[in-house]
Length: 264
Image 1: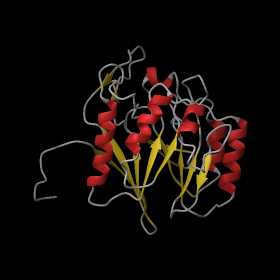
Image 2 (image 1 turned 90 degrees about the vertical axis):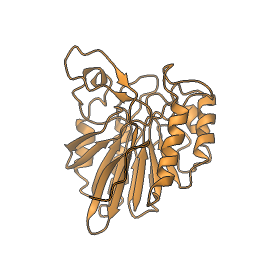
Image 3 (image 1 turned 120 degrees about the vertical axis):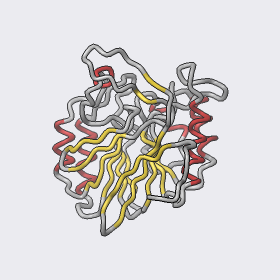
Image 4 (image 1 turned 180 degrees about the horizontal axis):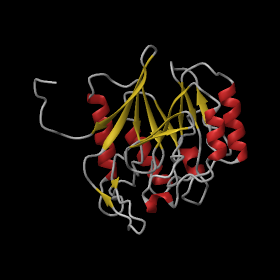
């Protein structure tokens, strides 16, 4: 199974720019075109939050128009820039989304089970999974302790070292770590939020943060670093599952580059 991941597209109403500088809608279309042009088309696309920028209904309408071009099924989770109820309304035809409360769900119709955890705190930018969310996750993981499982949530459950991102990271992650550590069939934890590729060993598995299809957060590690972003090579991720070899993740850069050349 080949699973694609796009994160943090920050879709805007038609004709508007993200932060006044980035044509996030066009860049999201380019990301979709990129997936369609791969030599092996993904079986599934995961969108790991911040689908839109301000959580407004007209942004979600634009997102649905763009997603209608996809030639593959997709699953979505909200990020801190999304609005939970507007998100729910925009994807009311996605029957696996719960009709009330946090947008946790599980899809078990693929070779890899997909567990989606809503890490958002309505009205705030940091992430947190409350006791009810932890209990839901525990029950869901307990339902099958053998099938390869992928857990996705918007906020990475670790500190990145970038101070202006860590101020609204996923908070109080020890209880979440304990639940995840108890399930040894979680192949990978997928996140967005940080607009950069990041990897960390955590809770007995691997956490992988996906770059944004729009902008990249500057890698500034000084304690007093000021927030900054760049527009450069956007990217997505491809997660290849094989029953013999396990899960391998690749960053796939979007846009033209020199080549290909006839050597490896």
